[in-house]
Image 1: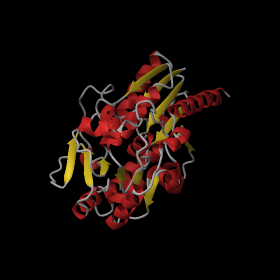
Image 2 (image 1 turned 45 degrees about the vertical axis):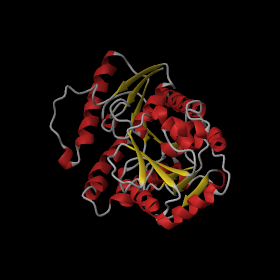
Image 3 (image 1 turned 90 degrees about the vertical axis):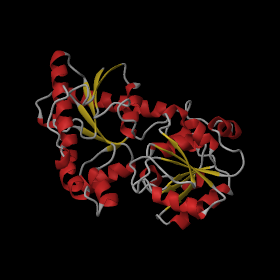
Length: 347
């Protein structure tokens, strides 16, 4: 089976969740061609950022590149990430297509962008291309949360295929050894935050928690520039180094205001690190009894209470990740979805 995998960016360009997903999905098929904007563009083009149409322009470029390649060497199936293949459904292409929705722009706008300059364009411009991306394709949602949003906001039906985690890479390491590796003192609890230092990720809660609790060390792994003496900040840590951080900590603080999945949470739990998480992404559908505590608000006091609760109990979330988010299950589910799409197209 020859597969075209369409995505805005490669993992080398943007080390985000969608790009990591693309790297994982490569392993599902023997013959895969990944088509990104950088592999589709000659570097020229009008910048449409101020009109909120830059992603749509890049998606159109990716679609043109796919059509060129498809004329030379037929693909059996297309798998497109988000709006990377938005205009293919309006083309005369007789090839089955899956569109993988990693989140919804309208859901993001409603939940975290109100009152910001990005609210109206995200809700009323970008969302148009999300709807167009579903035309002529079978829709896949990366979590039950995204599937619910696709139906409630767009009336798009989707099948849910949850992410997988590399359980060999993300596994618990000895805590003392991990702290020594990272140059952290051995004594005292460490609360880990991983992500951008912005309000969407709940970084304001991390700052306030650190101001309130001097007995807990707050270790932040972030690409952002952060200047705060109360925080231990490590910037731009490679993904392959993250098991050391998850193993060095006592709890993951994950107060994000919007997530579709939350790779950080899954990776941390694979390393057997309990979480204190906002009720978003996969944490809308997980039972906290096995993994830590899920906080239904963004009040710092409630996160601090949850941290104390987790520190006083024993949790082993790796067991849940092994059952539900194995890489073998993830790869098998996408192979099955692609095979079903190809078979359905023959009828």
